[in-house]
Image: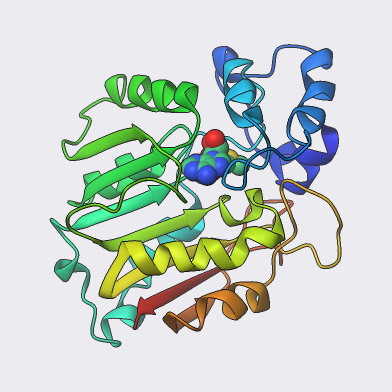
Length: 254
Ligand SMILES: C[S@@+](CC[C@H](N)C(=O)[O-])C[C@H]1O[C@@H](n2cnc3c(N)ncnc32)[C@H](O)[C@@H]1O
């Protein structure tokens, strides 16, 4: 479990409120085993372990905040995307998807920026946590929906997404599912729409997961048949423990 903390750079984050903290040493030891169960079905290779982790509050990936890299892109660096013909204003009011949304802070962030944000998570408990999180958010924005859904198998929505955001979902999946991951975003994001990836953790050849080590090349390999890469930059001032391990990329659906 310490491994998971170290990998996600969570050893350095400020402590969360007591109710969000991990309960015991036993739980700390339990998580990697929970998340490394024998594969069952393709879209849920961990065989329900995500839901068990949420039920047991063993969620070391959950920073309970929006990542600096995303906020920096949206609030300080979007002019680079605008130069590619996608002003932020063209996304306002449009549908945004956060797959594997967990506690849902990213969805709430996008809704606060004016999007119609949909957060999907396979875990029923995660969806419950996300809804409670929204309910307890001061001045919570409207335009947020959380749904229990399998990213790979849920029915296509009647109107596709203009924006999607992927953080710690790609790395949560076994590498054998990466091509399907990219193909699914290609189905869900409309032509001209945008996929933002916060690429993390870039850990070279580190084996095993989740979280599996990622690389910009790995994203490129599976996304390039469907998306044009229009931006790739490391966030400035990464949090301690995440230096050189994260990058933000933006992809335009072709
Ligand atoms: C490592 S967690 C990251 C959660 C969130 N993005 C965050 O940063 O806090 C991965 C999340 O993906 C969800 N998940 C795993 N497989 C999924 C699938 N096939 N469809 C939707 N969600 C899935 C898990 O339940 C879990 O909440």
